[in-house]
Image (cartoon, rainbow, N blue to C red; front, side, top):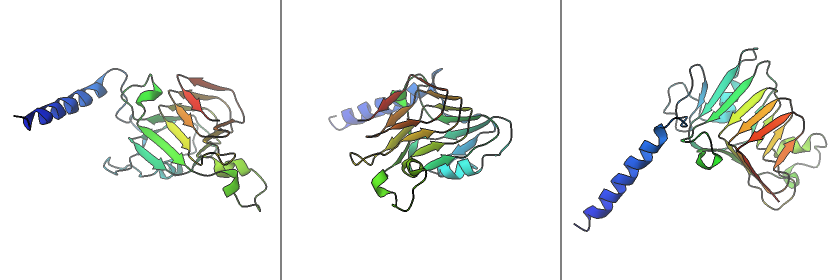
Length: 194
């Protein structure tokens, strides 16, 4: 009987966890027409890295969506200028809070890591997520630069206009967010740095 008690508890926890991701604030499936990023490759037609998905964004005036399944994506991502609006959605059980985010883009690079021969746009080389396009909305995404206490190390740089960040979590040490151009709106989000 002592062996069964932990198993029953574990089964109840798994059922409870699965059930919590079905409410009105859950976003667990990509919208129709979205470019899907899934690190496991299980979702049909998906890309395993965010950069691969970004590379498939068409440069048209219509709105496009990137949907990211749960995971930690260890890469630098640059979203180039595109003509139309862009929506980036992270998988989450609660769209109203960054605490429930299940998608993280992370990279570790600081100014000290950029070759001295590079003299222009040095911050771009350290940035984990660089948004060059305008009219971008980002939902439920964690972005981190994990270089630590070694100087400028940007988690996210916005280099266009008209941005909205909703329930996002940005972490780094020095200069976590480089809000180069605007306007920008950060709602129900968390930004952490030194």
